[in-house]
Image (cartoon, rainbow, N blue to C red):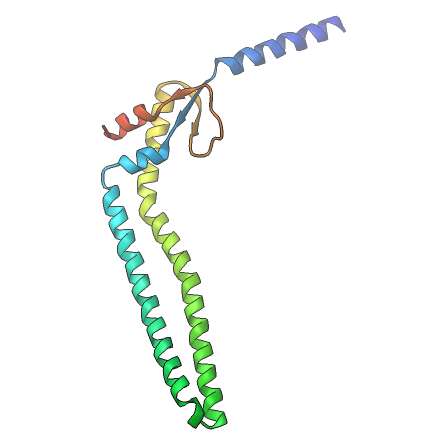
Length: 165
């Protein structure tokens, strides 16, 4: 029985020492992303896409407003069936505008992901390379940490790996 307790105590001691020997680091990937060469072109492309979506939305809103104004001017002279038809047309157009808004937000997020992915992949590859070269067991991103008191900031090493000054 004493041997089992002694073996467990020794195993626990080795586990604690192994955990203490691991190196931890953190990196600010947002800072790196902002400084990466070519990130300006991503922002320009994203802005152009957003402007295109905004133009489509404004066109739809203009169409709606024009039809609504015409309806308001002519509502007193319309027959019941024509009024119902035009009300349905306005309602359908309003629904299409709402659907477009929801879809446009998703499209914008998808476009942002598509454009940012090569930059994020490059950052991840640099983090992997720096972590392996310097013997880090864990690298945490500071944008997702609420507190980090110890560990090395490898942001400068990753920037150097990516050629960022």
